[in-house]
Length: 116
Image 1 (cartoon, rainbow, N blue to C red):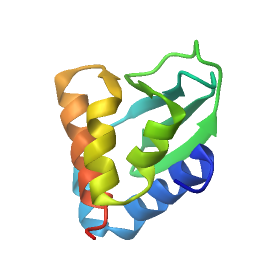
Image 2 (image 1 turned 180 degrees about the vertical axis):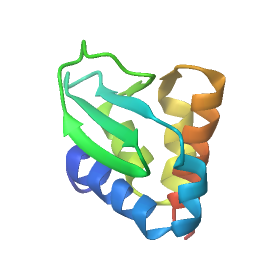
Image 3 (image 1 turned 180 degrees about the horizontal axis):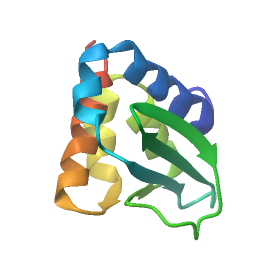
């Protein structure tokens, strides 16, 4: 996978914004999702608030509603926007949070992935 994890997270945010029907899923979902690359120690946050998504880098010990963790290579596959890469990466990364948040997160990833 080419591209840094931060650039792939920004591309994911853009795909979310381009698909207007996804606003129904994110409306009222005020959550902070932490994406943590375990092998490099980097941590990014996607903050869903008032229909917007912001991507920031932060400390690994900041509070989050949902934690997505795994090897950086697997996280890059997860956010690459390719459906096959997403299906592979979904099995390789770990999610920690409420079941409702995990299901919503999975739906957002799945619906923003492109078919090949």
